[in-house]
View 1 (tube, rainbow, N blue to C red):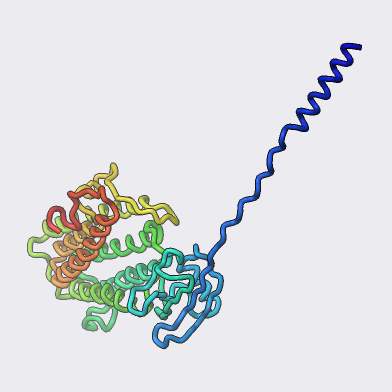
View 2: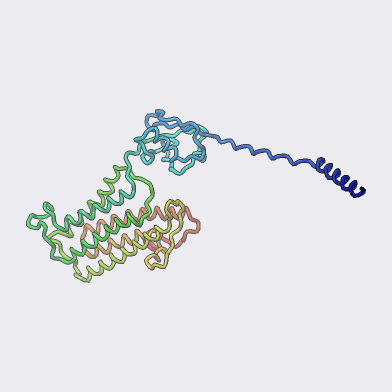
Length: 342
C-alpha cells in the first residue's frame, strides 16, 4: 500500500509540473518585404509624344526587360533597334543596367529613338571577309571588262602573282572560319547603314590591290625570289600567331559569361607576346600585311597596310585603356600594339 501511495503521489507531482511549465510561444510569420514598383513612361525623343506607359515594373528589371515590354506594344521596334535614354542629350542606356540603380524616382521617364534596321556583328564580319575574297579572285582570273579583252581569262606568268592569290585567299578564308567557329561574338548589333561603310573599305581596298598585282604589266619584286620568300615567311608566321591569339581570347571568356579577365601567355610560343602587348592580334595582323607588302612590292598594298595600322592602333589604344581601367593589377610593361613604342 505504501508503494502504491508513493507512486500516486509522484504521478500527481509530475502532472502539476507539466501544468506549471509555460508553453513556448509560436513564432510569428515574418512580414513580407514590400516591393516598390516603378512606373515607366516612354516618350519619343524628337516629338516628346508619349508612346507607352508601363505600370508596376519591378525594380530589378533591366533596360533590356523594358525594351522587351516596349517591343510587345510596337513589334516593328525589336530590342536591338531601340535606344533608350534618361535625357535627350545623354548617351543610350546599356541593356544590362538595372532600373532601381538608375538616377530616377519611382516614376521613370525614358526617351526612345529608332536606331534603324540592325545586323549582328557575325553577319558584318562575314560580309567584310567574303567580299574581298571574291573580288580578288575576279581579278586573278581576269574576268572580262577588267583588263584588255586579249587578257580575258588568261594567267600570269609570274609565280609571285599566284602565290599572292593563295596568301590573300588563305587570309580571308581563315577570317571566315574564325568568325564561324572561333570568335565568341557578342549579341550586339550594328546599324544596317554602317555596313556599306565597313564593307566599302575592305572591298575597295581588295579590288585596288588585286587590280595591280594581277595586271598583265605587273613587275616582280626588285630583289627577286629572296624578297618573295622573306615576305612569305613573315606572312605565314604572323598568320599562325594571329590565330593563336584568337584561340587564347576565345578560351578567356566562357559562353554566356560577362566576366572579363586579363589575357596571359600560354605554353604556345606565339602567345608570349602578351608579356609586351595588350592586343597582339592586331600586332600579328599588321605583320601579315607587312609581309604581303614585301612579297608583292605593290604600292596599293603598302597604303592599305598603313591605313590598317592607323585604324588598329586606335582600336588597340582603346582596348589598352579599358584594361588599365578595369584591372588594378594589369601588367604595366605592356604597350598597346607595338612593344615599347605604341
